Every structure is written in structure tokens, then in C-alpha cells.
Amino acid sequence: MPDTPFPRAVITRRTLLTAAGAGAVAAALAACTADAPPVPTPTAAPSPTPWSPPSEPMRFPTGFTWGAATSAFQVEGSLAADGRTPSVWDTFAARAGTIRDGSTGEPAADQYRRYEEDADLMASLGLGAYRFSISWSRVVPTSTGTIDSRGVDHYRRVIDALAGRGIRPAITLFHWDLPQWVQDAGGWIRRETADLFAEYATACFEAFGDVDADWMTLNEPKTHAYVGHWYGAHAPGLRSSDVAAAAVHHQLLAHGRAVERFRLSGAAGRIGIALNLIPVYPTDPAQPEAAVRVDARENRLFLDPVLLGTYPDDAVGGEAGQLPADPVTFTGLQKSGDLETIAAPLDFLAVQYYGVTGVNPGGRETQVAPTSAAPWQQVLPEGLYDLLTRLAADYPAIPLLITENGIPDRSPAVTVDDPERLEFFRTHFQQAARAISDGVPLEGYYAWSLLDNFEWAEGYTQRWGIVAVDFETQERMPKRSAGFYADVIAANAVPPAKHTSWIGSINPRAVAG
Ligand code: GCO
Image (cartoon, rainbow, N blue to C red; front, side, top):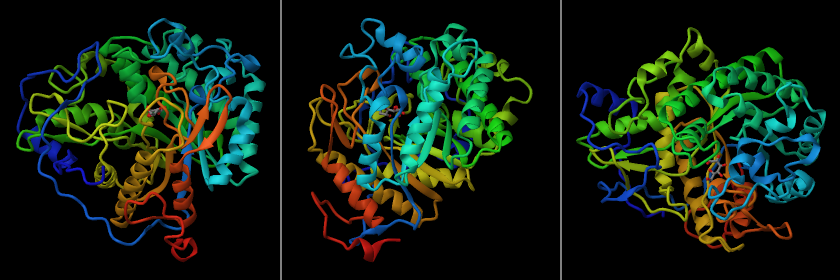
């Protein structure tokens, strides 16, 4: 992975302006159809400009946050406990043929009952923060809007368990598990869902406003809109690019309304949004137009409204690489004041980075880096550097957190032997340190995931944890990568070269800070 050639012609705002000046290019080949996610096709990578890592450990700033992440539906289980009602993921998973192994969110990693044990585990790894999500349908189980104190009390216990071990909470309000009662009323196709979300968010700020937390309004609104409403491979399983476009706007509106409520509530802590972003490399840098549109669809459609208060004009439409929805309809969803709301000032941007994509002049997504066991994931550590430096250049003055980054195990079998993940972390930490030393305001990193868990449509067939979980016994077993991560945290530094173990290779106290 670290030696992979990588293309340097990543799309930036500057490339975009050049391409816009070049005028519109006729749609040759849609990158995606309404029915299928884009499948990368192998192609030769453009000429590499490899980065040479230094031979010394790379240090992180004092106070850098090291954490791990999960989400409610993926780890909690106990789906009927304490008044919880179904979410769209309960409904979707119950439908035949939706989940690879026919599984459901039960038992997942049973964290609803094992949060104390998991907090001990986090403490043993030295984690300074834990990112988890609140299940909306535990807090507001029905359309009456009544808050269920049993749900609230549960998350208070989780927060207390973390606080007792010196672990700071990073709380996501929405990680795709929309209450089914909200979906039944129209879900994200409906503007009013933004108001329902603001009410739910307000209840959470009131309940936990005393906690010094990093709040995230939404997790990956892009994935939820595209994979859930366009490709139909995630809940709620819809297949319409126009509905996906509505889901984009209404989720972003929900985000903005929640940020406004956060400020009004006077809650402690900070607030941001978690966006999954992907460097897009044109396979022919002389013809970047289609790649620019893919960048608009994948990145700027979310970054620009949230951070600049505008929608890009090249993300939605019929040209290759765009979200193939009707741009007039999309614009019609935007009411006066919406963009101001969506652009409510944030305290940080939460970045989720899994890899890169290439785009050929015809708009087709191509493979420019090796894939992990997840076929959609093209692994390129240098892409993280490209992404972070691009964000700092195009959207300056906002602190960044990496709130997800990781790979799945090679096989579905439970294992603690994960050399690929260890090397993935090492090389990505290096690129994060490199970005910081080049001035990027990166303040923290959360590994995805703390635990093996329910990986959405892949069920339990993809294990993303730094800690293995035997789903039969619920035994937790830290993987080798967790040991490596614990060493990095203790040293606040990443070692220079490929090591199966670097314990003792540096003196943590000597390099800390
Ligand atoms: C996402 C989600 C996580 C996934 C992880 C691995 O980024 O898709 O936030 O819930 O499990 O990314 O696919």
C-alpha cells in the first residue's frame, strides 16, 4: 500500500475553474446508473510522485485526539429494549435479499448491554475519545414526538461510563437509522423531516448539554442519500436519483436547523458534520472535465453549502459524472433562507476518509489504487494528504477531525491477526502527520471501528474492528492493529517504517508531544 504509485492531478477548486472555463462537455458515459453503484474498472494510474517518509517517528501535536468510532445500529443490538421502535434499517434488513448473510442488527456487538466493558476496553487502549451515535428511535420512538426517558437514560449511562474513564464523547445524532415512523411520513423526501430532526436534536442538547462533547449532526449524508435513495442498496432501499437529490437537500437543511438549535440551547462542547470525502483523480489530467463533475457530486455538493453557503452548479444534471437528477427540481426544493441555515457556522468539519477514485474522460470511475476486501475501497494513504491539504486550501479556517478511517479484515472469519490494517493505519497516520506539518489544522483521528459490527448490506461478513468480536459469545479480542494503535497513542507519534511490532523501538516519553 505505501509504495503504490499515485496520481497527483487531484481535483481542487483551481482545477474546477479551469474545467468550467473549458465549457460543457457532452455526456459520453454516465458514471452511475439509477440501479447500480459505480463499479471501478481497472486502468493505468497516471505517473506517480511518491512521497518518501522520514526515517524518524512523526510526532503529533500535544492534545491531538485519538479515538475510535461506532454507530448505534451497527453495535447496539437490543433492538426492542426500553421502548425502542424500528428504524428504516430494521425494516430493510427484514426484507429478503437485502443483507448479504441475511442477518439483522441483532445482536450486533451487544453494546447496549456491554458499554461498561467496552469503556474498559477503550481505556485499556488509551483512547481519549469515543465516537458513537444516538438512536433517534430510542429517544423519540413514535410520531407523538414524546421523549422516552429510558432512551435518554441509556445514553446518559454511556456518557458517564466514558467520563469515569477520562474518555471524551463524540456524539453523532444521525447515522442512517431513521425511525420508521419518520420514513412512513415521507422520510427525507419531505422537507418537514428537517423539522422533526431539529426537535430530536434539541431533546438531545437539553438532555446532554452539560457534557463537553463533539457533536456531529449527520453521518455521511451522501452515502445515505445515494446508496439508500438512489442505488437502493441501503435502507430505505429507494431507487430514484430525484429522491436522492431531495434527501441531500433535506438532510443538509436538517443539519443547519440542528446547528441553530445547538447554539440556542447553550450546550457545552462543539458541533460539526461528518462528511465522507474522496479525492477524485482524472486518469487523463489533460481532460479533467468529467472528474470535476464527479468531484462536485461526491464532495462539493456537501462541502460548499455547509461551508460556503452555496450549491455548486455542476453536481446535479445529465452530464457524465453528475447526480442524474433534474436540476430544476433540485433548485426548486431550496427555499429562501435554506442556504443560510445550512451554512450556520461550525466548530469543526468531521472528515471520513476511506480512499480515492479515478475518473476517465468519459466519466467512468476507474481503479487507480489497490482495493481492500471492500471492492469499493481504493486504498491510497497519500490521498488522505491530498484531501486534507485541499480542504485547508479551499475551505480555510475550520478545524478538521478525521472521524472514520479503516479497512475490513481479509476474510469474514474472526481473527486478531490483521497486518494489513496495522500497515493501513501506519501509512495513514504518516499522511495525517505530514498534513499537520504542512499547516493543516487537523485536531484528531478516530479509527473505524472500535469493534467488529453489523456492516450494513454486508451484514457480519465484513469485519472492520480493531477489536474482534465473536458474535456468538460476544467475546472481545483486541487485534494486532489495536496494539499498534495503543502504542501510537502512548507515543503520540507514528513509527517510520513497516514494522510488525515497534514496541520498544521508540521511547514514548521522549517523543510525546
Ligand atoms: C460509512 C459509515 C460506517 C461504515 C464504514 C465502513 O462510512 O460508510 O459511516 O458506518 O461502517 O464506513 O463501510
